Image 1 (cartoon, one colour):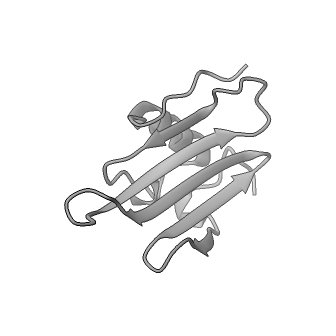
Image 2 (tube, rainbow, N blue to C red):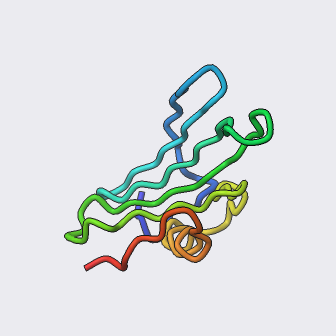
Image 3 (cartoon, rainbow, N blue to C red):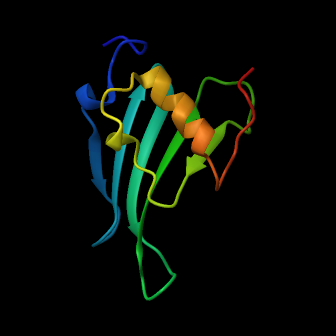
Amino acid sequence: MSKTTTKIKDIKWKTEKQTETDILETFEVDGRRITVLDRQTGWSDGMRDVETGYKNKNSKNKLNFWLASGNFDIREYPDLTVEEAIKKIKDNANTCIGEEEL
């Protein structure tokens, strides 16, 4: 699949159970990785949060990770392409805000 035309709804996510209640979904293409983590937090008696992350493993910049938390799930935008999804993740990043790729 081409990274520029693949839509979020067409991604084949890899699912990993992190704990009894936490599930990590990952997608990687050309060294660029999108993650969605549904997890129990330590706040308010274990309230749940979904957070979406993006990392480019090919970037020379070590500060290249963006994380949008607060129930931000990129899968809720099924018609975005991967490129559009990466931009949306970066625009909504509020926990970790990376630096633009070199």
